[in-house]
Amino acid sequence: MPRLPAPLTLPDPDRAPDHDPDPDPDRGRRGGPAGARPLRTGRSPLRRGESATAWAFITPAVLIILGLSVVPVLWSFLLSFQADDLVTPSRWVGLDNYRALRQDPHFGEAVRNTLVYTALYVPLSIGLGLALALVLNRRIRLVGLYRTLIFVPFVISATAQGVLFSFILDPEFGAANSVLHQLGISPQGFLSDPGQALFVLVAISLWSGTGFCVVVLLAALQDVQPSLIEAARLDGAGPWHLLRHVTLPALTPVSVFLLVWQTINALQVFDLVYVTTKGGPLGSTTVIVYFIWEQAFKNFTAGYGAAAAYVLAVALGVVTVGLRLVRSRSVRPVPLEGAGK
Image 1 (cartoon, rainbow, N blue to C red):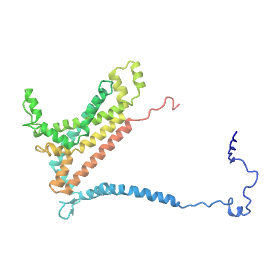
Image 2: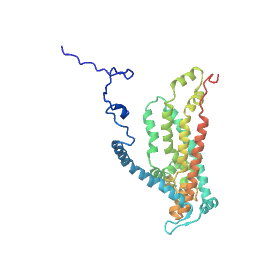
Image 3: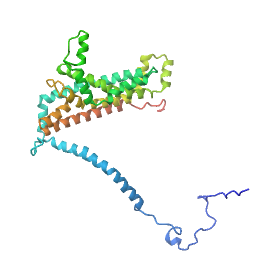
Image 4: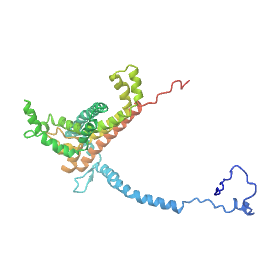
């Protein structure tokens, strides 16, 4: 029979040793046990090597961020106080660009069009997304196919959407007017009508942007605790009461996120306008970002365009901070019963 290895026992740190393990008489003069190494306050070569390797990996990303984000932001901020045509040397004009924006009727029209677009697109996209998410959250046949079909337009680029709908909504040869003719309805101008163009752009954006809201809200609906719904049903709550008092409160954080996200996207809409209407007809679809591009790269008034860009940046910051404050006030901790007793 093979012998078992001897058990390994560790000394108890709380127990004093029976004999002195270090008979060195010079231990008291050195201030510690024999062979003890003095503490080092500097960093070891290994740690310095790891830090150098880490900086070698992150330095390219830092340079890219500085070169493509921080430096252009600072440069455009200084540019907003100058008169610059991107060709001749610029000259300092102070706040003249911002004063001119306040008196420019075209900038006021761009702001008005952007606000109308945002006021229509944001609530409609979230509302339609919530309705579709509630339908697709049920166990129905081919539900996976329906979810995919609703999300597919979101991954299509805005440029491709603009080209597609430019052909469909063409006043003379488009498929939309052909269908209206079959229904006995007179042809519509769509993107060439100043009274319809902005609303048509909202409809195109809803076709693509609603899918994102559906996916986010559907994921949030699946995280709602079934016990809350069952308890509400046992108390006699109907479908409307379940939606109002159980589902919607559980979706509040996600709804605030979608509100901020969709608002920022709506205020920055550009590519769809550029591909379809180019700000027309008669400036009815000129939004702020298209106005900035037009002033900077079409009229060659880069300083004026930079000033408009910073007005938009301030507006986005105010909207984001305001929505975060609303969320922080609406989501408050519920005090425990009897906590103050």
